[in-house]
Amino acid sequence: MNSFRKTSALLLVSVGISNLGAWIYFIAFNLIILEMTGSPFAVSILYVLVPLASLVSNLWSGSLIDRVDTRRLMMLLDGLRAFLVFSLGWIDSLWLIYGIVFLLNVMSSLFESSSLVYMTRLVPASNRQKFNAMKNFVQSSGFILGPTLAGLLFLVGNPAFAIFANAFTLLVSVSMLSRLPSRHRTEASIEPFSVKIIIEDWKMVVRFASNAKYVTLIYGLFCAMTIFMSGLDSLEASFATQVLHLSESRYGFLVSIAGIGIIFGSLINSRWSHRLSLSFCIGFGAIMTPVGYLLFASSSSFMMASVGFFVLTFALAFANTGFLSFYQHYVPV
Amino acid sequence: MGRFSGVINVVESLLVILLTFGIGLLAEMVGIRPVYLAFSIIFFLVGCYTIHVMRDRSKREYFSHNQIEEVS
Image 1 (cartoon, chains in turn blue, cyan):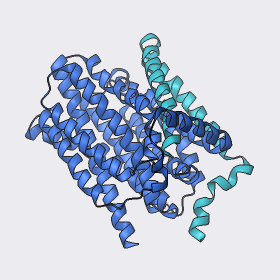
Image 2 (cartoon, one colour; image 1 turned 135 degrees about the vertical axis):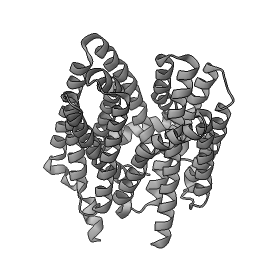
Image 3 (tube, chains in turn green, blue; image 1 turned 45 degrees about the vertical axis):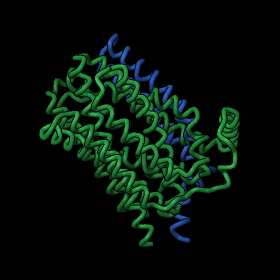
Image 4 (cartoon, one colour; image 1 turned 135 degrees about the horizontal axis):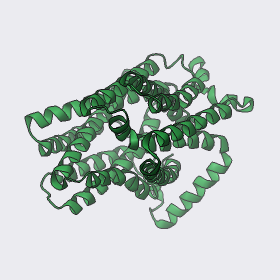
């Protein structure tokens, strides 16, 4: 049990460091691009590159991830990301920067999928709900700590310095991952990786989805939540500043309240994971997250907007934990 | 698992791109608050549908595995 606690803690710290680094890098890059071009549109391209990279990588990444040692893949990806992030600090060409950021996003998407498979293999089924809540807590802490740390790094150095700091955090994450056990199942690696295999895998997924219709429906509904949240979040800053007329610092405070909501929700999930049923977590998250958005959408004061933000992120912690645990239980690893 | 989430994420990413562009364009044409409110209401309906799907009595066993594991 102690060894499991140790590996869980190592994995969570590694996820936390990567997440913190990603926040610092993202905020720094917003500022660098804005400084280089003076154009908000040039900055918004950074946001479009995230789902675009996810789209490109997910076409084939699953076939690769299910056949290789995920821990080694995660280490390789973190190492490559550290190198690319470090090289970004020396590049002036905007298009080259977009190209490298796109590659980084592809690697982040691969890392995310690999880590999900690795965690599912590493964490016993009975501990998953608690572990997922802890992971949620660690990731949501980055929500608060990331921008704060980025601000401190900008005070000490400049955005480029913050980018180098991110490269360093990725290397720390590699060293932590190297201390974790491998959970690779060798029998799957016999097939060579090819386009034919990818097509076969897609057919297999379609077969699985038609056999496990209910599991696919529940996970599909979670994806629908993610899609709505991404769309609404893209309007959030404009809504806060142009409709509610909040200053940038008040908007920043509002984002911190959202961070507190998700941290509070994750802590409750983690502390009482054995008492909270999956159906409660999913149901509460699925209903109360949009209620939070509705409160925010109909708000006319900072107070009501804060309540909306708190409710939506607090409920999101339940939805994340519930849906992820459900998914890990019913989708074969 | 990697393959399944890969395929689902492809569809999800496509819809995220389309919805983000769609919401942005609509906000420019109609206004930020009405668009934000309308999509929040649709999102709430998705939540209600999730509850409806979960309340299906024949599917109760899908949500009881954590208690079973606690007992065992």
